[in-house]
Image 1 (cartoon, helix red, strand yellow):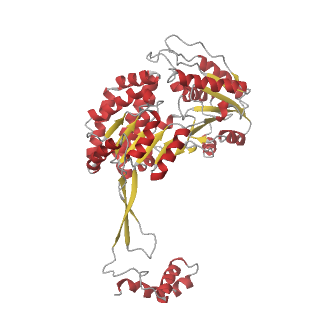
Image 2 (cartoon, helix red, strand yellow):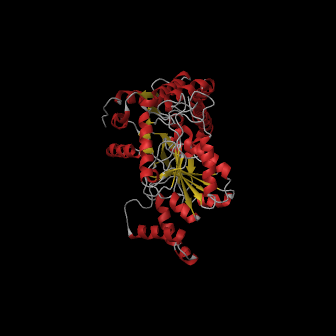
Image 3 (spheres, rainbow, N blue to C red):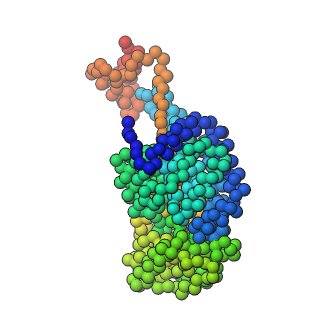
Length: 501
């Protein structure tokens, strides 16, 4: 038996004890408690929005629209649809030889699931994963980012106040990089991590000795393709929101905007105009469009990437606006970069801030090559009035979520899986696929043949047994009818072996 150790081992043990009772609770009991969480989400919406805004710097509207409302919808969907996704089901017999076997697939919870969540969406990201874990019968050890620890405490309070059993959801107070290794060594049964590619790679190494299963949602360098027949007003408004909401700190936000050369100039003019109309300032002001970044360090990191890109040949489409009054030191004016080369920082790397890169293309094949020119593939979008054409192009983009005439928002669709290709991670959260990540498939096989004494392939072996099994293969799969009929006499011999003493 493996002995676990470290600062989380005791908490994980208590969580496992609570989980074993929780797992036995009927579906209705689990979902009744979780629906109580939904009631509190509605009652505390203003309080939660303020907490999220104060901790992260995002506007109150961003906090409500991208965190609290999607969390409420997600909880409702998992409570309503989860039973169908996790219900046991029969697996029909696949061939004549084993037609007497009746198989049933069950979905068993892992036990204790570890969740490490980021600061950019400190409520919505962990909330859905916690709900999926609990509804599937798991316990949870949750580590939120230290920068947004207040949001984590508010989240945990919702579940405690709704009556979730003690120790079933444990909020870890470990700092930064300690959490992942501590969860691995402490004994979690599966680990969900949202964060950087570099940390995801470290966690894979930490988990390897235990063969601990991981779900990793890592970075994004996401492309949007604006075709020549796109509604430019719609595309500009949508991509500004997808690229600049939350101060551009969205791994699934639009970063590289690829625009057909025939509409490139009018698109850029309209984009510059709309961006200049955005209002910055105190994120608690309802009339502010852009909040601040998480901290000054992150702002300086993004400014460094912008300067590097400019030194590599890119130019700013508009000069940055001065910092508005009340915005704070971490506020950063949006940047629009044009003339970007494939070697520049803003093209190759994830830019986690309010930066949009706009590049022209000539043909769909060129657009596709540019969109797929990244090691990351989290989200993407295609903008066109021709939905059939857009969906065909979308299916060729190497990204986990591709939207037509929208971007980023699929994270709020509870029914859709969330996750990326390549360095954007492995596994999925959300949707039926996300729920299935919270359980292990188990099959129970029952034999229904009356008075069976053996299987035909059991010992002792003989040439007759060999020929009989070969005849059974021929009876089912031989290409000619005559070959199938010729196998019947030997087939009967092996068939009666089921009852031979």
